[in-house]
Image (tube, rainbow, N blue to C red):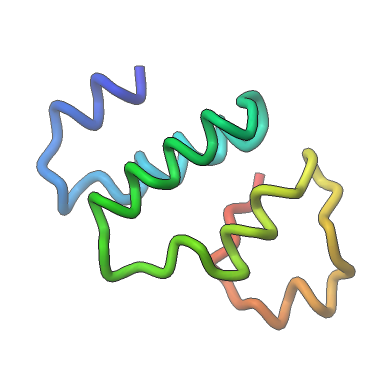
Length: 83
């Protein structure tokens, strides 16, 4: 589903779809699939910092369990994908 939507929309309208796709893979995918998808998104949006702290935190969360406490999470800003 995500692949067909990404293929059907112009790049400038796909950012939300990429984020939803990553959210799904963080929840259900394995590490290799997540890494491949993050690389594809990085190619689509080269100006974003895909390997930064936000990607790291999202990679290591599980459902509502985050790899850091809430004040630390808040310090990262509003760009973390929340489920």
